[in-house]
Image (cartoon, rainbow, N blue to C red; front, side, top):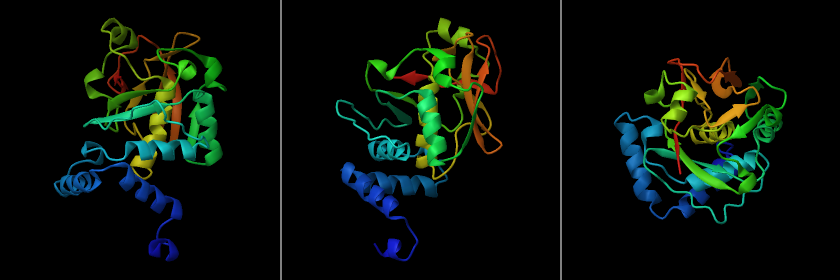
Length: 229
């Protein structure tokens, strides 16, 4: 409360921190490990996960959505981030909510992503769900120079455009204002638009941009993010 009174912290941030401590019984141990890893020079995304449920509550609060996580299990898996997708969420709804909340700048190749992107490997129309991706700021390096068609043949499940946009907000909160893919672009191979193209997302010129790429594209800088359930 003293930090809030002195104008050094926002009340909402302090409450979120307290909630994180309450949510995780082993918070003290995990936080000490986090501090130790930072002292050794570890990157933030490589440190032990802590309070992901609390962070996802913040994500949906920022988007103006009352989050109901009942029936969902959000695990803390070392080296992975959860993506929590609630029923009723769509790419266009999330992009619009980001703009209305003034979180960061966005651009998209189609006026309405819900109309443009018609095919998705997973869709919250059938219920809320959680998937996991590797906890890395850039897309998976081991999947570089692999087209969406090749990844499909190898049965590697990729992130959808909806999951990737939600992950952007998650990382923005987790990292204190940073963005995913400042160098590469995430190839959202779990989705296809009406022309058979693959939506792709990255950070360029202070803007989160949604592009499209050909499904046969093979390029080092355009990489998928594999998802696991």
